[in-house]
Image 1 (spheres, one colour):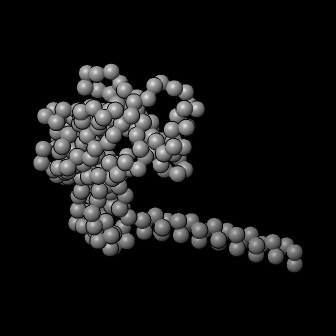
Image 2: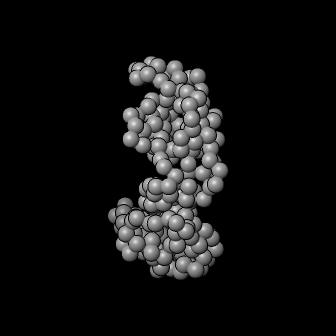
Length: 216
């Protein structure tokens, strides 16, 4: 949870074609749209370096200034990235009130995966759910929700109900049905595959022996 908000200086941009957008990106600017708060959407562009710094901040709330006007709190709703380079190519920001709860998507981070009891015995920990929907005040939205899986053993299933959300954060997904992670025993599968390979090898060997006999 963050207490200090990042600030972004936004510059309004008219609705233009793709050529203008490409020019902005070449100049190190990222186009975007600010909407919500009962106001009309506003197209803008922002310095890519300042945007990276704001997105790297632990704060979910970003103070934005449009053309130097008074700052207003907003949250990042969506960021489009280049499929190869990974850089942000477009963002959507949503105006918020700091005294009203909002919904957001927050990643789940599993701790001590290599130290888990099942992992030490050769089991494989698979994270099924990596993000959850939460509701909280904008300033209470966590960067991530963590859970220690050191006690997970082979055959265990981690459900969302076992994960404790930070204070002031409500989990919106089904607590009893959402599977976060499983600990499986791959050795059983490996043995089955080895048996199949051995059987195929025996068949090939028999065919080779038969062929040699025929030639003789």
